[in-house]
Image 1: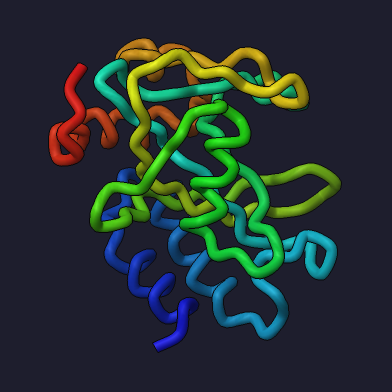
Image 2 (image 1 turned 45 degrees about the horizontal axis):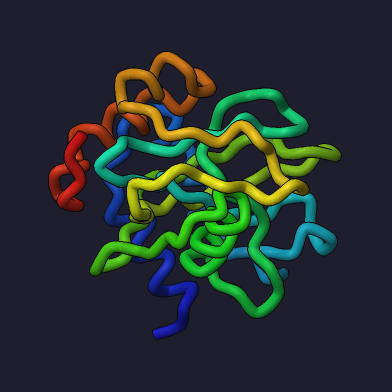
Length: 180
């Protein structure tokens, strides 16, 4: 089995939280069938990205995206030679300054297709990540607005398209031994 086959199975195992995610799952599974590099933003305007819902006993991390000005989970592009689960962990560490890790087993939790910059389309794979319940310390080149939110606060603050995913995350948090 290839990594793409593993990714396909992980995406297929997600129970969509709403119609947006159901459509995103279909579109992302289709994107996996294309013959070009799934992740390279300079090869195709349609590429797979990775992000993470970072959890601890303090809740979930959101950051205010520097360019978009909206409150979302940390994440970004998949680098050459990387796979989405590793990219989500790297991006979350870079953007929060926290030592994050995947639960065992690694969980692809949510999928969303949305417009990216420069007319690109992002097929975002969203993982659950765990972190110690300490304050984020983002580096100067990242958004300085990175905070822990209770799930209720996160639902109030986040980009509206994230509400259903965060509500699902709140219900799932005990499974990851995370309690507010």
